[in-house]
Length: 583
Image 1 (cartoon, one colour):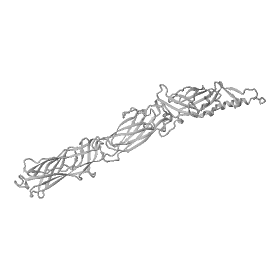
Image 2 (tube, one colour; image 1 turned 180 degrees about the vertical axis):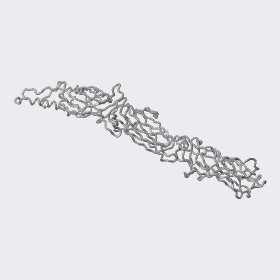
Image 3 (tube, helix red, strand yellow; image 1 turned 135 degrees about the vertical axis):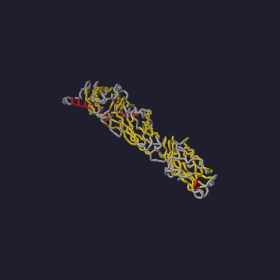
Image 4 (cartoon, one colour; image 1 turned 180 degrees about the horizontal axis):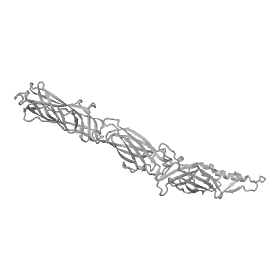
């Protein structure tokens, strides 16, 4: 507070000097005349008034505190941008099943050539046929990263990261050298349902679900021939994962018949002739790589930031200050770099300068972010996204900083296309945040401490002459908070002086909230000496102002145009004995 100040001792001296100037100089005042006189009593001396102290002078704007729409608002907006830790890639050995060669005997045809929709059936007259029936199992047993909690689908590539183009070869041997060709008509190649694959369909190869049907002519040379069927493997759908291990042991089967045309063989040429068949699945690289995983994945994250509240007004941070703000809003805008939806967990912690949680209150949030896009949230005290803690209680006692931390990111794929790439280290989560707290309180209790110093020099002329001093004040208050003023007398060393009594506290009435009305309060502060020369030790007055919103007033708004002004006067109710020789 800045006072328009009049020195009390100077005023008294001026009055006495005026009186002394009226004395006739012909008199010798040193002869038998008592030069001590009494002043004071009900004499009231104006000692000035404070400047109009507006909250705009007491509360300065800074990095966090701003004036928005005429009201004080704690507001901080910034950005967090961090990469999700890459998930280790996975390599699968021995993907291809190891088909064993087998032998079948040709027999005289007993049935019709199957009719498969989409397949072109050769125009032949069948004489002999041989059954094809062989199965083999995949044998995949591969650990997957611990971040992968559940699997909906897996996308694979070859070991060079290219699309996995495989070839199923069926080699036939052991046929008579005179035989020019054989026919595979309606042969079924049946893959496990878990395998995600595709073919280039034609009138020789068609797909139906997890099966491929083949109608091909096998040209023979020296009794041997081969056909090749290109198959593109994309991955696995709903594979078995047990204890962190990908397991695939399903069968791959080949079923059907091989036919010989009557026009190419005689009646006895193939009877009891055996045919050797060798299937083989050829890969472009010996190993395959897991490229993407769709499912439930919890990657490691290290995403956090701190919001410093160091430039808030001191009176809001005084020990004992308690705030119950009406609302605190937290705006979050989260850019999801993954095509799958993610569930995120946030932890908001108010911390002191030592990093300890204050207010015994940590707020937890749970947010679901749409895949591949930005999602916006406005969190207020009753928002369903709050899973624990109180948003408004974050500022019950003003912390030194507020930590905002992303504690978990959980990928939740809704379909096979919403997958996360393994080994990818540039998934960047971008978070814009905005903390907004209007200084509007449901309940407000604040403390403000200050000290008036160097009183000993101002009062040097009178402290040895008076025992009792009264200060009268009229306080014009436009701040909607009831104020309580208490003072303590201290010496030059800052120690409390014994032997001086002061009132425990005086109350200053609160102004009505929000309408600009001024509330005037008359107060009296009596300083009385109980111990001889105690007032001569007075050098400082420690002042504590406590603000508590009035009973029934649960809507306190602090605005920069609110103010307090104090008109003051002092009097010496017991008078003072002044010696003219000292003037």
